[in-house]
Image 1 (tube, rainbow, N blue to C red):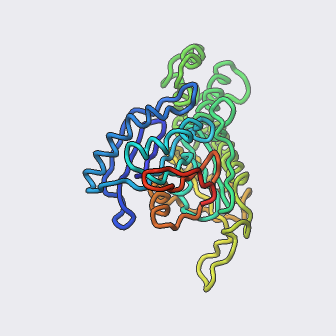
Image 2: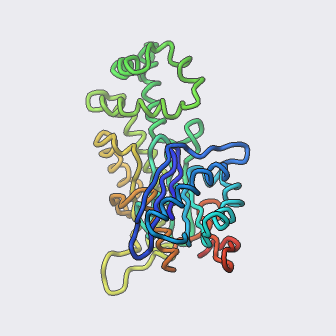
Image 3: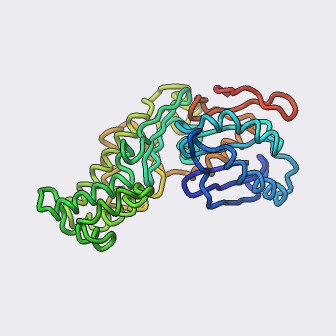
Amino acid sequence: MAVDSGGSGLRVVVGTAGRGPLARGASGDPVRTGSRGIDPGHLMEQLVPMARGLAAEAGIGRLDTAVVGAAGLASLGDALRAELPAALARELGVCRVALAADAVTAYVGALGPRPGAVVAAGTGLIAVGTDLADWRRADGWGHLLGDCGGGAWIGRAGLEAALRAHDGRAGGSGRLLELAEEMLGPAAALPGRLYPRTDRAAVLASFAPRVAECADGDAVAAGILRAAARHMADSAAAVCPEPGSGRGGRPRPGGGPDVSVPLVAFTGGLLNLGGPLLVPLGEELTKRLPWARQVAAEGDPLQGAVRIATDLTTDSFTLPGDEKMLCVTSPAGEGGVGAPDLHT
């Protein structure tokens, strides 16, 4: 079973190593967070009936391995790590569990078990890299403290430029002011509309496409997207391994691609902004990581969870463990869950 738990709800796949994914399900109810972080009880309430139904649909009698990729796991996942493996064993008979940050499943979905860096850019932004010996992360600190270059960052910068134009200050954009008022109402009322909202980041990110829309003829908008591209490249460079480093840093015997060259991929909804962001992103990445090879992401975070589950099932799992980002429990007898094996 592979699970992707994020801000829009749960996505679940059930299958076998030999036949691949056999049944899929989804819930539009995001898992709650509270004083203990991500709520394992709420996750199980949604997951157990869905998993049982999908297993029956797929003709699978018992789920042996489960991989759960969860947004916020690194900083909000203590309760999940403490309770979920035993709960999955008790309710579904699962004997091996991998708990992964959604940035890790995004990495595996994009690149598989190869050295490199992946930047996941949507409303927020986080970069993850590995040399197959250790994991590194950069940013992902939320729209108030970071997520630099992400959708909320671009939208906030665009709205700032709109308010500069409203005030008559330097650095403003009349076109962005028009678009902001068309979308969100009078400029002077923006703080009162925006600050009290609990979904501020999503509202800010909703303005990012407007910034891209006028970038071709507006130097301020184009400059915002160039700055976003620079931030994205900086995050990729912060986590990308150097050529030849780590367990992945050896040329492949007998020819084939040189796996000592790290790969870089970008994934997430922000890429839908298209050329106004992607063109400067390619240029900035070449400046920051001239030795890396940029490739298209192969899949999304759910596909990454499926890949991890398949590799665990076939004993071909090679990714490094990490206490916060990727923790794998080992089987410990029938129906039991062993201690975390961080270096499986």
